[in-house]
Image (cartoon, rainbow, N blue to C red):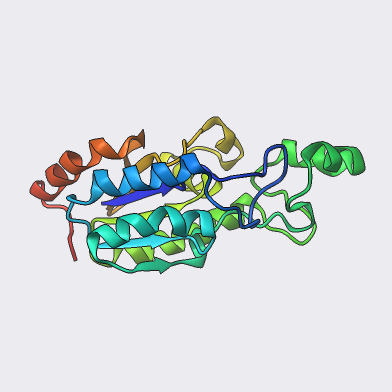
Length: 211
């Protein structure tokens, strides 16, 4: 089983385009990371992976320390690169380039800000990263970002990628993905970490892969 976690609450960025901007966790976020670690410390996880961005690594670190494991950083789990729009106020971008802003709203899947990437590119690299994790020891926790969770879920659920903002992954909540012959199977979405240990034990008893 792959436990995909959106990072804990970060500080700053309200009203701005935030992708690769490296925001720290807020005080609430630091508490959420500790709660995640406490809830999953006894879940017999085999590995902890995270996006290279600080808000993901700092969410993963307390859990990794509780388990005595390293945090493996995977670039494929990073948030979308918003290029020239990165860190800019949304209203300022809309005022400066209304045509591009509208084009993004019409095609979330393929639109790329200047110097950035599309959600289709995010989805492709994230699936490569998850495929690598699926071939390693399981279960594994992978701490990532809202854009990545949305893009991966669209693929696993057979949803058009342009509908990704219909999904709302919450901070420090968990998405359960089971690798299968036909691809990833969604076993849960926006679950609190406290619910995971019995679900992971049940998956193990059912014969889920562990190595």
